[in-house]
Image 1 (spheres, rainbow, N blue to C red):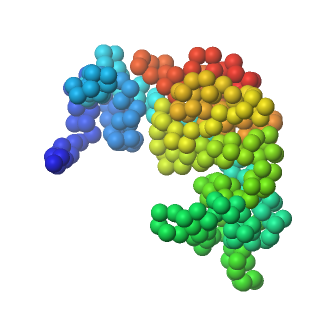
Image 2: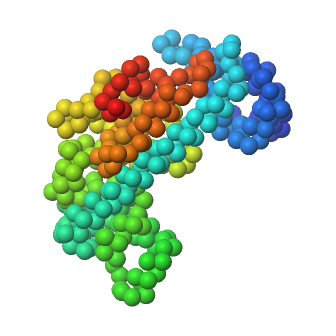
Image 3: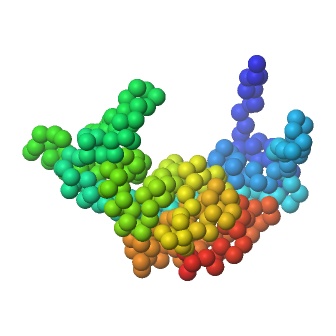
Amino acid sequence: MLPPYTKPHLSFTDQLALLIARGLVVTDQAKAVLHLERIGYGRLTPYWQPFQQLVPDPNDATRTIRTEQFQTGAEFRHSVDLYLFDKQLRLLFLDAVERVEVALRVDLAHALGKRDPFAHRSPAFLDAHRANQVQRGGGTRHADWLTNADRALARSKEDWVKEFHATYSPPVPIWMAVEAWDFGTLSWLLEIAHPNDRAAIAKRYSLLPNTLVSWIKTLAFVRNTSAHHSRLWNAGIVNQPLVPKPFEAPSLVHIGSDLERRTRVYGAAAVASYFVRRINPGSSWPARMKAHWHAFPGMPFAGPVQGGFLPGWEAEAIWN
């Protein structure tokens, strides 16, 4: 049986004293206390973890475990620098994802709307195999999706929603409903859309349907991470982007050359850059992402490599 949590509540000053006792260098204690008050110990913790000592796991000689002690030369200010770098990284991603999300709304509304104004409400207009798959709760994949989609529409406070219900009886046609759905709902619909519609949308981006779905799911994961202010710069990407075939997206084939590129944020950044370039060829977003990583704050124990930005990444065609 695991022991209960017994660590006491600490003041901000005591929190800093604990970090100093563990070997973290603090050059300006008053400023450090202000950072703990504004940002919080818990939110900064992932950003100083790369500075902590690793020791062999006593139960597995092939593994190491992180201790609470810091490596020699680790400084509190560097964790704040990483936090601020990550904050700007999340804002950059949200800028790109917004463009992709808006474009995907148009793509889905146009493709499905040609079949029927309410095509999203019936598996008959979708990928029957995927839409009718039974989920753990007993409902079908489409039924679960529709519940979420209708719930999002019901929560919407947009004037057009009120005007629609004051003028017409439900349901709402897809070309209107898409405006109430978030990126996750859109990505889910793309996955269960009619195969011909999925292929038509993928063709717009010169991608195969499976690649498109994979990349949209990658961006949906990054979008959720960014929107909830979670760590991104060296975190693992759960929905890793599929490596494209050379004939569909040659500028992104290189993400398959090293696992770190796909399992860390680099792969998602390359995917976002690809979409932004297709949607708006004149966008400065790829250059801004490139400049952001070139400005990675100098410090020991942390660097762009931990985000999958391996040496020579900036020479890849996707960034130039």
